[in-house]
Image 1 (cartoon, rainbow, N blue to C red):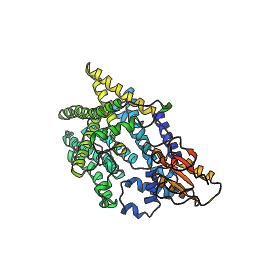
Image 2: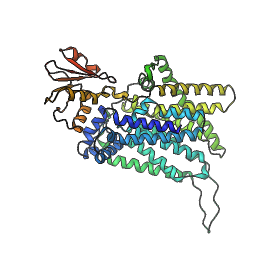
Image 3: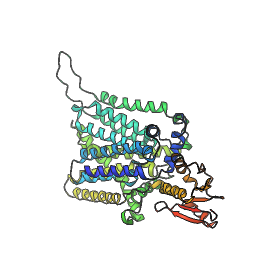
Image 4: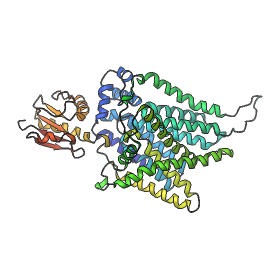
Length: 495
């Protein structure tokens, strides 16, 4: 399994170095990296994932600007997430088939893999969220007599950094912090240590444990609030998402299980299967939260440390349920959209973890619980199989139209045969990525691109699927059609 994780990281490195820069990556570069550094601290935008932007500024400033250096922080966050997922799977499930199943469900979701490469803050936030979750599970399972302040500080700091990396992680971070503090308060006090040199070493209390968790969390949160341009944010800035909870569930299922056509083009999950997953996975989280609460609270009442599996059930399930309640409240009170696709990135790995944890818990019992556990494990295996089937190295789901942008610009450079200047009309979605390559390749023969669209008189036209009518509005010569994006490059007949 360790070799599989290493191979997955190698695939991420290959994607980071070879895939075309996307609209959102290039927009961040345009506003915050190519411009003055003060923009990072003065200008708020939904595209501004603060911690990731700061790290991208450092990586491109030190190593120069390229696809790889722009994505280096996300790539390193991906390595951290892979290591954390491995450690979490070992901690909760030991070895064996359930360990392997949990590992795949945590790391092979194709949307998750996209954001362990793309220069956005989602992968960074996901890595820190799971670092905090793993530290919390380890702390609870270790027992009150084995309190580890380093683990508590790591959990608190990681949770704060998750929110600083991406504000969409505020809901799961709040839910996870709340349930962890409640469990710390209910842990039995360990026996007092014997006196030494007439001084008693007081045992750690729930209050001191909570302080060791809350201090780094509060410190990171305060620093983030002071330096990030949060005061410039308005409700209208949070526009990415969907309008209903049902749309949110369907969106999350679609981007995970219908992300692409899969190896050999055989992945085409039917609508009813996606609807079943959209309904079953939230129910699995609720079941995990209830099942884990019974097991963990029962252990604490009896003065015992909960098992790592039981702590996983409770913390993962409660994080999903608590985040859902937070999102419902924010939608009702402030009109903020529900998560759709990447803005709910954390939900699918957590729900997959819940599925395997429920299966492991039920398999410890006799029939009919054991049969139910086998059914849950089979569900997880089908999900894992669909994830693996969709491994790709060519395109990001959310910006598929940009998958061939680099190749298209190379074709223009070859086709123009030294003629300059050249007029190029592009679909507005391509503007940031085309400007990125114009700058990094120092192609001064190319105009600065704008968002006027491809409707006008140009030498070359580059259009995404939505703008195909342009191709039929005049007698153009098609030069290239992107195999991954379906974006078309065409030229005027006189050029």
